[in-house]
Amino acid sequence: MLNEFICTHLKDKRLYDPDFWIDRLDNPDEILMDEYEIKSFNHLLHKKMVESHLENYYYDFSNAKDEIIANNFINEIEKVMPLEDLEKLIGENLFFKDSEKIRPLNKDKLREFLSKFRDFKKGISEDISISFGLVTDRSGLKSIPFRYPLGITPNRPFHDITRLTTLSPGEPILIYRRSFEVNWYFVQSSFYSGWINRKNLIEVSKKEFFDYNKSTRTLILMESKICTEEMPIIGKFHFQMGDKLVLANEDETNRFYFETNTLFPEGCYPIKIPLKNRLDNETYGILPISSAKEVKTSFLDFNQRNLIKQAFKMVGERYGWGGSDYNRDCSRFIMDIFKCFGIYLPRDTKYQEIMTPAERTSFPQQTEERKIILDGLKTGDILFMKGHVMMYLGKFGNEYYVKHQGAGFKQKKTNGDFESFDIHGTFIMPLSAYTLGTRTTYLDSLSSAVKITQGLNKI
Image (cartoon, rainbow, N blue to C red; front, side):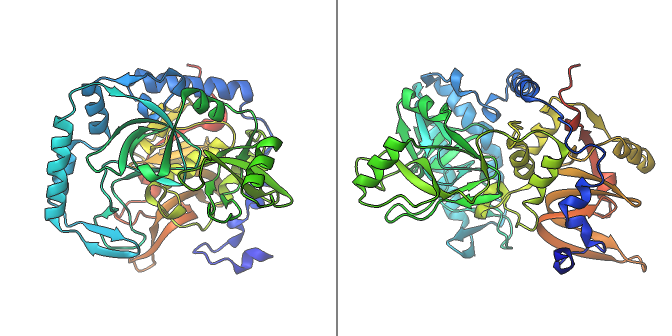
């Protein structure tokens, strides 16, 4: 078996075989929520976010306005990075990443930036017009319009503390205003507002915006990551699990390849992607994705078999804060899995925990009482601790296992010393393991469990 060649801290390598977990389930193909229930689930989640004044973390573009009041715009900027948090950064010894080199940041540069940022916000006195846009390349969404990634350590993988999330090509955005740093625009995406480099967006009409995003000719990506086949001049585009790709029709495909004097590759899907200054007189490119890639025309059935299969497609991938380096963090790991079923969870861990409209159980202090709660969970339920989220796999032997995108863990040796496993990736572990920064187990660090496999909480 291939499992014997896997490098892992686990003694039983079968735990990295998705079929091992599927075979242990009583009814892995039972539908946990049908299409109607999932729509109700998403509707209630959106309602909860709006009622909590968190609509910019779960945005409905059908309610988009033509302009925003100046003070409200300033508040939106402050939401993603309060000025006092920015000022605290001056006291930190920060590092910045320029290409692949990581260097100490000159604090004078940050002070100069902060001074300009304050003046920029003070100068906002008129209402801001809003336009519609599309993302043209895989792009980081940042909390401040600062050119370089900033980190508090020079370690790799480098965590850009200003990076909020990552947007894929074709994602819808509202464009608010250009920054004093002319290459950056403040935008609203489906799950975040923040700053994006202007080279990675185009402005489109309202009709074009909704025609593109409401298209019924779409494919849903089921693999962890894919990219289009490379095309001269244009290059290639990267996508990830749960992304919805718009298909070009036959006329669009034939016209585009006639005008570019090339042939569309045999056996590929024609994906319609917005372009940015890559070809003259072309708003969209028609890029090929091999039909060998795993895509669907509809969402997966929401059952435990599919939950396990999707989660295991990311095994071994490196950690990426905010989606950096074409990777994921813990909340994006969870979010992308559930997008494959048409379930749209918030982007941040804290909102996944408190806003998901499924039964949520808080963990008591006593370890044995915590185990009782775990015994009542099903494979695919979601576990939370401060600043972190994991997927519950189940109990095997005397251990409770989870799968997550995380930093790593410690194990206690027979002599009482700890052995650290610095992983920074997607992996499986028992909850009896200790967190890297403390002498507390993951089990005793849990804050709550969300029983999403039991469906919508109607109470």
